[in-house]
Image (cartoon, rainbow, N blue to C red; front, side, top):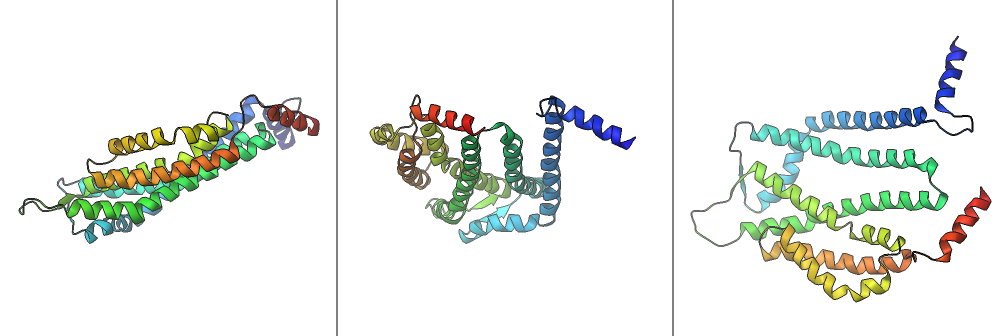
Amino acid sequence: MSTKIKHKKAAEVMTDDGSMSLTGHLRELRNRVLVCAVVFVVATVVFLTISDRLVDLLTAMGLKANYTFVFIAPQEKLIQYFRLSLIAAVVVTVPVALYQIYAFARPGLKKNERFFFGLVLVFGLVLFCIGVLFAYSISLPFMLNFLGSLEGTDYITANISIESYLNFCLLVFIIFGVVFEMPLVTIILARMGIASPELMKKGRGIAIVLIFFIAAVITPPDIFSQTMVAIPMCLLYFLSTFLSRIFYKPRFGLGDEDEDEEEEDED
């Protein structure tokens, strides 16, 4: 009886030509989503137990800048503890989710597509982490010291709401994480035949002006914060120009057809 059930399940998952059926794909997708959900729930519970350490990790920079933290609503402090725990759980879940996406799509990709897809996922995750670390170790401490040392009326003191402070820190982390994705975007555009090395060189002047404009829009209204964002963006643009030389591929080049023919022959 159990053997018949196993054969029935196998028939539902696989089609006659040996490929996976729609039911099989849906089951695989369900299992992969379930893995991500379990990781998120477990990570949330773990981070809730150490949420005070997460808050200490972020407020340490403000304490060095002589900030005094307060909460102006009865539930504000508790909500921030839960909020940081959820964000930390998302950070842990993202790499797992990216791997599940890659594993789900991998059977339907060609060899060069699998390599490029995996490179995009890993490189994008690494760049985002580097951007956040850069913000935490360099940019954010300078911003907090600069904003806290502004001269003004003596009776105005820096009693910062813990919610406002954490919002500012998370905003800076997200900005730098996204900004550091510029080389990845360039690689994708170069691979599509859009961002050529010649185009990157010719647009260097316009790009620098746009970078400072974007930095002025996405950062707090002070020149120091804008400069701290614009300078890394300019350096990343130069890195992106170098990467475009490596990954640039003309849209209608013969290389695509040759590669496809070679892969078909191998199959």
